[in-house]
Image (cartoon, rainbow, N blue to C red):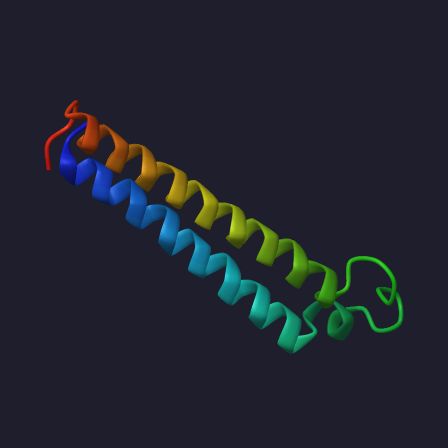
Length: 83
């Protein structure tokens, strides 16, 4: 895999991580679903639940980036890929 493509893939995962984390923080802080449907989203589908789901997705994106990075570094160490 070309080096530039590898950089772009890793950058993509890190950007997605930040997008999901910032979106989760925004939804959690602004209480969007509760504001649109007051009283009907107190237990399920409230902003706090959405925030937790998006934080888990952001952590998963970080995991994918780290696994991809470690795979890339291992390939360099083994000599099957050059930097």
